[in-house]
Image 1: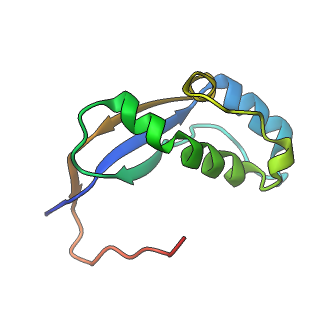
Image 2: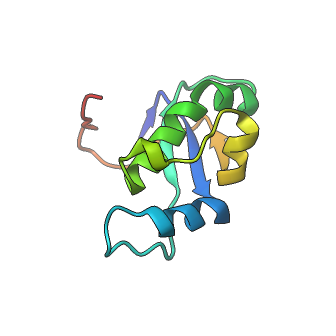
Length: 109
């Protein structure tokens, strides 16, 4: 087991997000039952959860809505942390463990 030098934010969509997603999903066969949270890796050491969300909420918002429908013109406006909280709940932590022996791979953004 390896300790990874990252913290995390786990994002859980609220009812308001699911309502939007059900209406605006780009694919007909998507079912939003028993949805999993999205996990975003962040810097390992942070002191205040609010400052971390302030730093990343626009990127998270974009990714979450883009996953449902890539047409940004139909996304709701999320211009503040309060707007973000209307669509998502979250928690965070700074301990990430990798239980696998294989190296972590990633795609470039």
